[in-house]
Image (cartoon, helix red, strand yellow):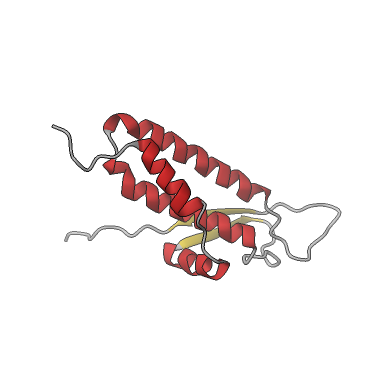
Length: 134
């Protein structure tokens, strides 16, 4: 017996493209939404004192990653079982693209040196855990 609320992967991908990626809000709204997404940035290597965390491209990429995660988490279970692989592969490749975009960003403001320095950071989303039982 099929569930009536199951959806097609291609339909969901189209919804994501149109409602999220092609319909980005103003920068200030993205910043506000990123704060609600609870992203954490952990410096791993390099001097972070001159990093511009208000870079428009950084904010746009983080917002897109957060929205992608929210969409994936809320819609994956509504897919027909045979279509989950297609859905997963699309979002996996999109996440890799955003990670590559992050790696190419120049986040140093007013910083120009002959010898480029390395900056390495971990960006993750804080997850809320379910209630613990005693």
